[in-house]
Length: 358
Image 1 (spheres, rainbow, N blue to C red):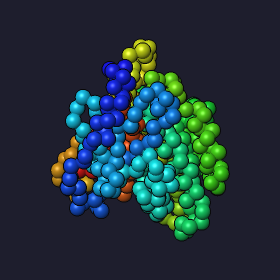
Image 2: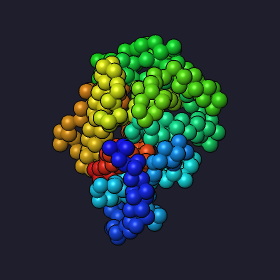
Image 3: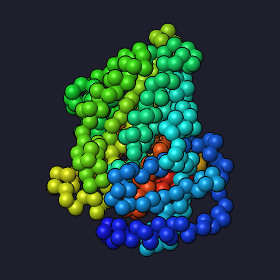
């Protein structure tokens, strides 16, 4: 199939050029202002290596700023999606930060829980995006613009299957348990007091060098685990209010069946675990979106399967309807624009659109 598409790249390009987008009424969500979930989509630039191999762009944001994304397939009718706030290949990471991520900083500073997820196919630019956003978060925490004094603590870890590893302690394993109050505890993890932007970024870089990775069909250095940066923001001891938490989560990349044909038995097991945990996460986020829509009416027993995955156990406070902490979540769906990856891109766009409509 890949060879067929490459052989017909010129025809695909011609069809794209002839495409005239129909008039489409953009949908507005009247509940968007009260939702705890913000959805954005970033379409990365196609790389020089991809262009040299004969690949062409198949995913385009509408130029009218309507928030519509068109995806073109050679053998099928073009598809259109409205996957939240759309960022094109020309948009800088700073623009994404100011539009959809920066609001999480004062939110967590004031004692609430903010979470950022980078989601998408292997090779779609998740790690690049989350790394850039992390640098901007570090700057905002220490630039002196936030009111009041806070103590800031950093922990960084990776989750692979049912295992958890401390990336600031030589990948030492630790346990994820619930205490008698139902609160998730990370037993044995190290946490560092942070006093500057440079210190946070230095520890983050050291942690990234220990993260598990392996070559895949799509990416020579694909991340094979979920990496979590937890920034805990504690008020001084004389203030009784609860401290805030900011999570930055670089999710492992999903892989399509055609990308795993050469994997060993161990790698196939690893891929199944990744895809299963991503599926559970999607179900949990969708469940929270439905509860938001119903204004958190606890008389309606919405089932959210957060105990089915290590990742969602760690982030239990986001998904448990009985939790009292205020949470906000931003999901950045990352898209590979190549016409060889329209199947995975369509799945990501469809999911982002579904979250917006929930």
